[in-house]
Amino acid sequence: MEKPRVYVTRELPDRGMKTIKATFETEVWKEYAPPPKEVIVEKARKVDALVTLLSDKIDVEVFKEAPSLKIVSQYAVGFDNIDVQEASKRGICVTNTPEVLTETTADFAWALLMAVARRVVEANEYIRAGKWKVGWHPSMLQGRDVYGSTLGIIGLGRIGAAIAKRAQGFGIRVLYSDVYRRQDLEKEMNIEYAEADELLRQADFVTLNVPLLESTHHFINEKKLRLMKKTACIINNSRGPVIDENALYKALKEGWIAGAGLDVFEKEPTPSTNLLLTLGNVVVAPHISSSSFETRSKMSEMVAQNLIAFFEGKVPPNLVNKDVADSKN
Ligand code: GLV
Ligand code: GLV
Image (cartoon, rainbow, N blue to C red; front, side, top):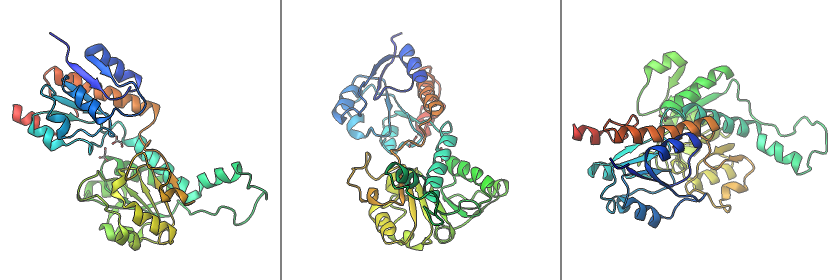
C-alpha cells in the first residue's frame, strides 16, 4: 500500500516529526515563518493529511481545493484557525493536542501573574538600564501581594482548573465563572462559582481561560474592565481576541485597572507599535505558554499518533469533530 501523503507546515520538535517522517510520505515547510496561504492551498491539493499550526488559516479556500484531504492534525489545543464546520461537511477529520499542554500553560499563566504582580520585568529592566543607584529604598518597585488575594478564573476548563489547583499554595481565594457549573471541582479544589461580572468586581487577579468563540470574542471590553478593581491585574494566555485591546489600553493608561500579563494578541505577531507596549504595567510574551521542551515534544508525538490512528482506520484519539466519525459508522 502506498504511504499516505502528509504536508507539515513547520518543522516540529523531534519525536513526533521522526514518527511522521518514518510513517508517511512527508513534506515539511522548512522556514521559520509560516507558509503563505497559496502554498498551503497548493500543497493541500495533493495530500491526504495536513499538519497545521494555529497560525495557519485552514478554511473553505483550502478545503475546496483538496479532494484527497482526509485529516487535519493540528499542533495546538485551540483550533479557531480551522473552519471545523466546513471540514465536517466534507467528512474531513480535525484533531488537536489537548491535555499534554494543560499544566505547562497553567504554569505560564502563573509566571505572567507573578511577573505583573511583583514587577519582575520592570525590576529586571531597572537594573540593566543602570537605574539602580540606591541600594535599598522603602518604596522601590512596590508590587501587589499574590498570597491572600482573590483570583478570578474565567473559563474552568482543564487549563483553568490547573491554574486553580496552583492557587492553593498561595492561600488564595478562587472564584470561577464558566458556562458550566462545576460543583464537583468546587468541593475538591475549594473554589467558588460567581457570575462573570461579580467575579470581575471581586478579583485581584483575573485569568482568561476560554476558547475563542463568537461568544468570547471581545468578552473583556470597556464595560467589563470598568467593573474591575483599580488594583486588579488581568492575565490572558488563551486567545488574543478575547480582549478588546483598545479598551484594555485605555483601562491601563487611565488606571481603571493596575496591570496586565499577555501571552496572546488580537493580531499575532503584534506590531511593535501596539500601544500596550508603551506601558510599564504590562508584561508580554509571544504566545509561548505551552513552550516547554517536554510539552512541545509531547504535542508533536500526539500529532503523529492522531495521524497514525486515522490511517489505521481507527478514530483518532483527539478527534475534534466527532460528527465525522459518527457519520462513518
Ligand atoms: C496554543 O495556544 C494552543 O492552542 O495550543
Ligand atoms: C484546554 O485544554 C482546556 O480545556 O482548558
